[in-house]
Amino acid sequence: MGKLPEKFPEYSIMYKTITNQIKSLEKQREQMPKNELNELNLKIQKYENELDKIRKMFPNSFFEDI
Image (cartoon, rainbow, N blue to C red):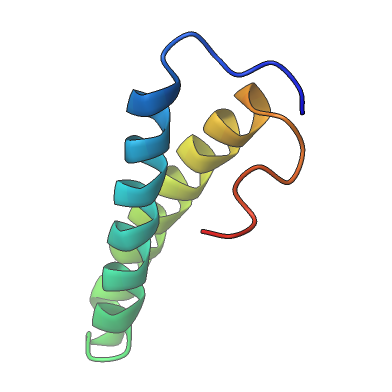
């Protein structure tokens, strides 16, 4: 296994929290009017970008089980 980042526990918790938030927003997306979808999609995109940043700090396939 590769080297873990210095603040490993915090990033791991952040990753799970952001993943859960994305799932929640995706459920909301199904019930939202079309005129509000763009804002929701932007939020989801920002969260996914943060997940990508966190994934890059960890060894490959570290978060595959989550």
